Amino acid sequence: MVNSVRKADSGPLALYNKDRVFAAFITPAGTGPLPGVAPVTASPENRRLLLVDGPGIEGMTDSLNRLGYPASLAAGIEDARHLLHRDQPDALMIGVDALRAPMAVASLREASPGTALLILTAPGQVTAASRLLREGADDYLLLPPDDHELRLRLGRILDRRDLDDRIAFFRDQLTKGDSRTLEARSPAMQRVTAQIGRVAPMRSTVLISGESGVGKELVARLIHLNSPRRDQSFIALNCAAMPGNLIESELFGHEKGAFTGAHARTKGKFEIAHRGTLFLDEIGEMDITTQAKLLRVLEQREFMRVGGDRSVRVDVRLIAATNAVLERLVAQNAFRRDLYYRLKVVTIQVPPLRERSDDVPTLVHTFLDELARTNGVPRKEISEEAMQQLTRYHWPGNVRELKNLIESALVSVPGEIIELADLPAQVTRKEPGDAPGNGRPAAGTTLAEMERALIEATLEHTGGNRTHSAMLLGIGVRTLQRKIQSFGIEIASTRRRPRKPKPTN
Image 1 (cartoon, helix red, strand yellow):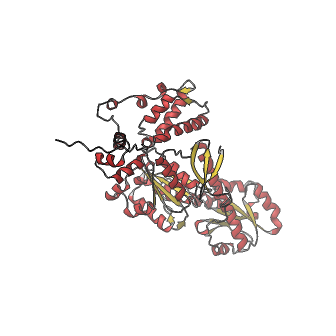
Image 2 (image 1 turned 180 degrees about the vertical axis):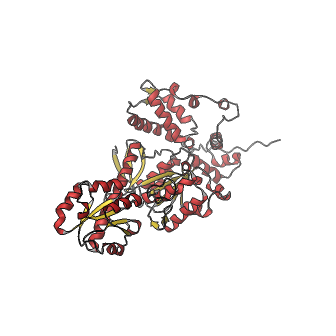
Image 3 (image 1 turned 135 degrees about the vertical axis):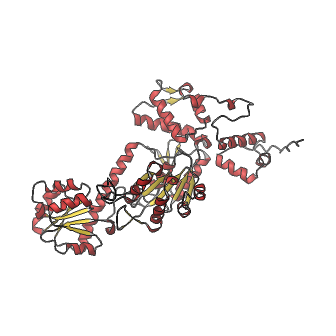
């Protein structure tokens, strides 16, 4: 629960929970749409309607076409059931007289559960239309309708249908128990937090890079939650988890019969994320053919479903993430250069956990709270020795590894306090390279870890003197300063006088 709200000097509001800074930003109250309220903005050209022929609906097809809604005509209710099952249209419009048989509405719902049902009725049949609403129809419309009323009623039920999809999506997300906060005590993560606050209000595409497990999807969610699209869907897709022959269908959807097993028309992630945000993780794993189609969507904001023959327009903000070096993939012709430049309008680099050890204690307490609730177990404390060891550990699996470790300790440690002895062997053991004077790094130590350790040791040797440290390291002062900022190293200078290196014989 948020305990206090502090107004920032300018721009958004910063939320605080006790002493932990949550990297969340919201616009002042009253400046955005009400949560959960969908505007009547159903796009006609993206919809498919089915109209059942019957008394009093002459000319209705012409009215729908005039309003931009593509519509087809069924000869009767049996034909309608067949077309519903085959085409899965967005809405069915049918007269009261065609629904006099018992369970008629239920049979139509069974043929296509996701299709909205609009009853067409004469003024003298309103009572019968009201009964059909109780049986499951969405709305009724008096005949003959004017174009304004027709547009309003159709837009309302289609937007309500989309809202139901979004509610189902958000309910699914809430059951996952994902944290929507970004713990930021280290300078490196505070810079990421500041970037999130700057780019969230924009429409620009964002490219998030970083090692596996650093929290790239959480950064993407925070961008979405602090954007004007926060009340719409956030859809995530891991490109590495999808076979090359299925990712196109996952992104753009498919028509019935487009391929073996395509028994019904299915929306893709772009269509589901309409007016919201689509997050594509591991974008570097996408095949070249799909890359070309993704580029067209970004440039034209439209696509065709697999097996389809008409364009579908969408309004989607794309956020992509990768743990690969896309520049290298471009040089190897494994990633399109034009798509690369289209994606990197805004770039955010999420540092690995070993480069922001100041965040470890806060993350540990956050996971202890969150995972205790999720697993229904009492919250445990952690000893100072165990916390110090977790802070020293190099975390090759990053935040994901830390979270899994805390969950394992919560459910397996019998006592109320997690002690040093309760931590896994790989966290507590000392490698041969850890011994004093060995001079060899521990097995599994990364180049970045060795570079950071060398810079820290040199700064300690020079009393924090950047100029002397840069001279000893053989790099420029500006280069050293960038690395200090990148690693989040904080060593106060004692202004020790530089010592000239001893000449070599």
